[in-house]
Length: 211
Length: 161
Image 1: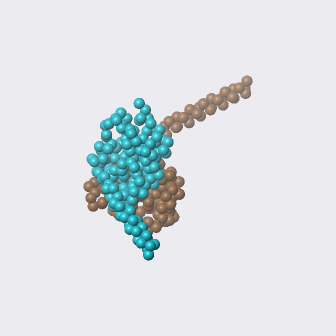
Image 2: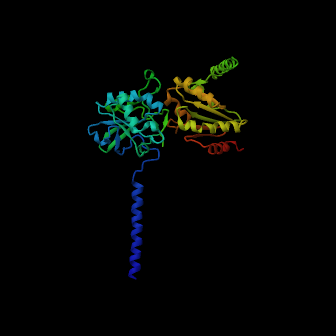
Image 3: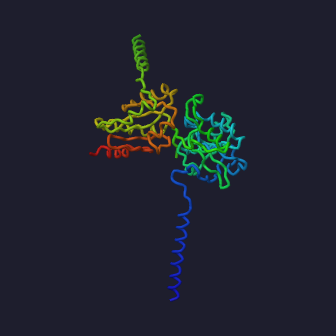
């Protein structure tokens, strides 16, 4: 008799445990398949920089936000934007919005994006921003980045960095002098002035991230 | 002397083949491309967006060529190149010649991407390759790469009466 009671309790406990588990799952925000959307809180990461040190967003204690750019050495669109990414860091790092560049490609597929190649390119171009490698390819899917270059503007809040803008840097990849709308600059300027971003999502051609 | 003449003749011939002008490219902005995405006749159109610098695009390109060769009557393939203008002569035209592309190649040159990408498909983030298959009654956008088998079985869903 005792035995069966204890068995019964086990079953009850298991059912309770399952119930708790399921309800926890149901209320835990799971990032969608497509990654972050505007207003989502970004989970911090820890990725290796070209100088061998590891970088997290939380290292930038005084940052008002971030310009996160998924970029690489080998995509021609990314290359066309290299100088403009550097210019963004020069202009906005001191205003509290540093550029954080993340290289998302699998280096076995794209050897031209290896850590050595990233270091070399950064040296040649004089990059002043962290150029990190998403070595396990776990960070770019969290963001929902699909291509290079792909830009996310984050704003620091009490609950963490919140996504404010997703998309292109500006509206003319081929010629910086013909740009009519500076999407990223407009968005960061708006955030610095405490306003609401008018265009928070844009599309642009890029190279698919190599897996 | 005989051999000298032969060499000279061969040299002239090889020069001639090298100097053969490549077929001129059809280059459009998005307004010019739109009609190719909206034909309203009895054919099924397979529209692939690619570029010579895009490795996965180049890898699947032979499948589109094979489709064009195997379905000549009721299917037309358009290969829309997103190559950069400064590489039309150095990369794109030599690529078309080297691979003897038989499908129609059209070049899209329109830097204001945010204006036209959503018009092709609202779910397209802008990474290539992508493919659009459409006819008068059905239209599907594919944000993916294809093997020949996969492409053919997708195409067949448009062709079954």
